[in-house]
Amino acid sequence: MKNCFRSSFLILMLFLLPVSMLSQPPLNSKKRMQTLKKMKMLEVIDLEDEQTNKFLIKYDHYEDLIDENRKKIRTIRIDLQDALDENNESKIKEQTKKYLDTKSKMHNLMEEKREEMSKVLDDENYAKFLLFEDRFHQRLQKEIMKRAREIIKQRRQQRFRNK
Image (cartoon, rainbow, N blue to C red; front, side, top):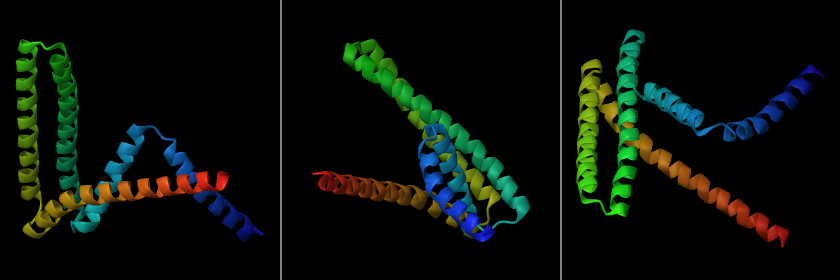
């Protein structure tokens, strides 16, 4: 009887968990994605506990800086578009300069991050890190597109059934 109750509870949780995850605000999904990325990265990169701590401290530091810079770029992009809409030449010039400076800073931050990671990781793990960084975003994008196609397919099937 206990096993039946436990099994029923687990099955119910498996169905409710995805629904509750979908209802989470975007910020939480971003944090979940960052956590998932770090977990997967640590599976790929073989580190001792002490190395893992050093790596994660530096990695988190640079990820925070890069994220902050991305937000600035978004804001400047909006300001630049507003300047274009207003046809204000001085504002356009000013916002274009800000945009290019901030994009340059982003590039420098990413280079700095790679340099710092190379100091913490041995050559093999550094190579794994670089490949993981590239592949993670590609795989994530593919997975998002795959799920979007599945949702569209399900909706079409539902519409067909409802007719």
